[in-house]
Length: 219
Image (cartoon, rainbow, N blue to C red; front, side):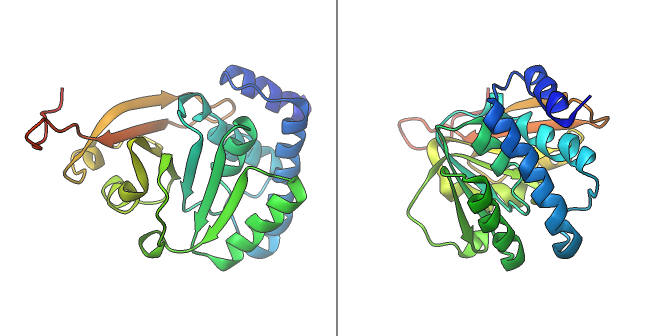
């Protein structure tokens, strides 16, 4: 099966609509990631075929669970999950945040070569980024433990927005130590085509408050 056929079948299994042009750009992205990886060491996954399943399809697996058009990818690294999400969700504006200059150099080149008009790059540490913007979804993929991610990214999430953490095995212990004021909304098991490993998407939101301003107990 060709890479395009594998990508098309994988996207269909994940209920993600991808145009032929978007599939081509995703395959071009893999080629670009593979090329730069030989010098910049952007990912431990070396082979393009593995990048398709371990990176692209793994990122696309969360697309059906994203609500909103303002998306922030924290610790984007080589553009994951942000670039695949930008191609799967063309009406969204995706911001890729990473503190590494070499990685953001790659990201800027990818945006140019792939003509990603709904992607912007920010080279900054999460805790140091000064912005007044808030996002509908703040997502991370293997960025940090949940407590650290929520504490740092929470202020960048809209009051009715969602923090989304991509994890491997179910992070029971991490879920028990969320910062005060946040609660788990859903833990979504993900079945990624071609990937024989556990994957979970953890959706976290602000805990609702009652009229007196105290936290309502979690249901």
